[in-house]
Image (cartoon, rainbow, N blue to C red; front, side, top):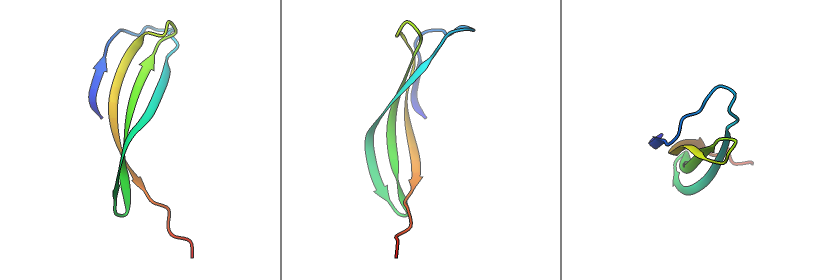
Length: 64
């Protein structure tokens, strides 16, 4: 996780909704790195957290 920002408090009973978007992909053997931007909103639609996440993913084995 990188660039994590908590922009507003959350409270017991709040409903939060994550929104994620893949913004980049780098191929590497045996898989790759996917960069995801995440925004978390509360029930009023206010942003309570934002972050950039890099995830190492595996590639499917070739069928054959």
